[in-house]
Length: 366
Image 1 (spheres, rainbow, N blue to C red):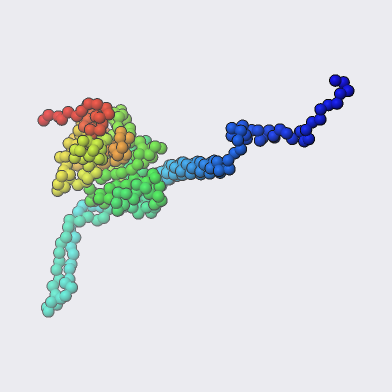
Image 2: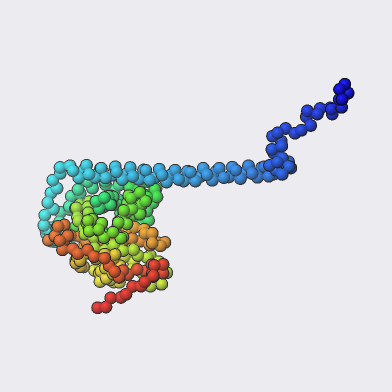
């Protein structure tokens, strides 16, 4: 009513409603005040989650760094070898074996003054000179024993340590790295004249294609095999060519083959006087297990090169590629002319393969 007195407002009415931010806090907490213990717990969880994220990023960053570093090292070492290989150097001919005459004098002469004994030892050869490319790599790592190459597939220096563990986790520059280094079995002999019957090389199956990361091409691609049948292995003393005769995936644990005895391919190093690790077993197994047949013959008098890496068919599986050295009367062209590449329609797989894919191995009749 006009002129009527207005009802007086409560003192401090403008402060009766809580601030907007307090409303939001209460609404978020169901209208209750936030418990200080809950807030502290949330803060700890946030900090831990942040630390875990930082750790994950650190691990990922380290992996990326190592991959980039490995690729850079790969290119550098390849260039070091190529530059040295292309230099003009004439290596002396080691010549034929010669008989060496040694004059021996007894440590304690007899009463007559002692007898001088002349002994012929031999045959021996003059040591083969180390090739320039090998010298460059030896200057970086004295464990260098060679270099293995398959065009557009493998291009790696090869070392040999005192065991088969160290170079799984150390690179060519002796730094601890996940990529490791391509290395020969420590039991192998890779000398100037002395060689193991079967030189076995190991390397990781790298996702970036370095090391043995491209060997998968020999697992299923017959056309690739036909176009790239050769492995070039240079020791510190010679350049040698090998032709691939087998490629297979093998188990490393007996339980993956129903407890049957393993074909431990990595122990077939010297066939003569080797007991259970005979050439006969080696030949039979690498033929039966191979994806493809080449039609090329091979025997106990040949020299072999085996490349081994991890596979993905099942845990602890290995992909193995076996090649034999070209004989003195063979050339790359003559080998290709006599080859006949065909698929193996009866591959000998471990039992674990048939468990997931079906089928079975049919033992061939004689």
